[in-house]
Figure 1 (cartoon, rainbow, N blue to C red):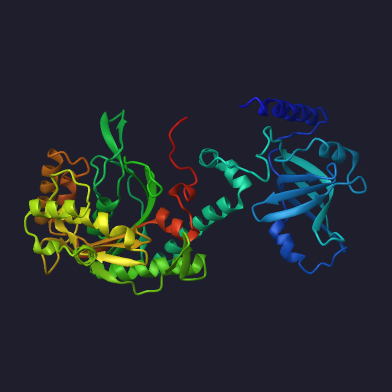
Figure 2: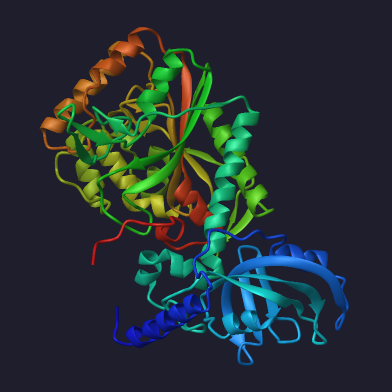
Length: 490
């Protein structure tokens, strides 16, 4: 606590003691409300200036302003603001005494009569003041608020008190998830839950977090993706359409688009391929945008983005060829592909496979240019160990990633269901891991066994909810759309 806060806190603790001396419990167990502020504004929208009512209400919220020596209070709740009038004409002596001990930031309950002031402000004439939580620390100064962005993330509760936009962003996130869930349920998908603790990390190429289970004396890994467990449920016949809105964890760096824990939607549908997943991706994003924003034209970072489907479909190699003139499909050897990628400015380690070199070239020269929604297809097989081979070119797989504003927001496959092919892919990943690739996937023997009992042909889709919410709220950082982002300890 800073030196400046100490005396202010001491004053508030003195008021806390005074409330107790008056026999007022400053932290009671509850308060029964009859209305919220926003509800009263709607109900009395037609009440004329200067008009009184005999409507008695009970409202509660946080004090955000005190004026005229405590005569007027601005009370804020989750729905909006209501003005409170505190005067001896309406309040008994005990209520007046309690009112004199209030501070900005306190949570109070008010009982009183609704009126509209001659200046047109909807107001409650308080007949009772009930202290609900005495705030011992002052809020940040009103007009400057939380100027320290880092402090906003560390003390998100203060950020939400002071910044209506922060509250709206997180509320919009909730509506995005609700709209996704509602559409999938209407389409016949079954919502499921799968483990967050895995004995073998899998389902994506990423470095996992490791923890230890004492009773079993084994290391466990925080989920990097739910994919392999969801496909086990498909093998078991639980449903032909499954989805999970899940929290994943990856032990990677931080950036405006990366947080170590993040939320995705992942789903699987039997008897379809990845083209069905393209249509579903467009459906989900457009339904969410229309539900939450009421439009398919959104602004992000000053750029107008049109979400109207259908979205273009272009292969990774085609996009690189168009941007650079280099045709990776005409290159056979990995070494030649690495040389070509390096000449295009790609960051390489020198051990990349043909597919990794193509991906590096795409990342360096194409990814950031995909502003309008685009499905990127034709991913290399050697970076897609869980996808079916492309029917026309065995070097590629039936996989797409959807890009908006240069970000990947969706990833989908025609899922690999051949157990022998899957084992070979895992073994190739093991060799890559032994060569130093920490993100290569280990062999999950039980998953291969599950495939040997028969996984129906299916399409799978993952959508990054955090990034989608960033787009739909014009938020520059993933930290803005996560209530409590991961931060370095002070």
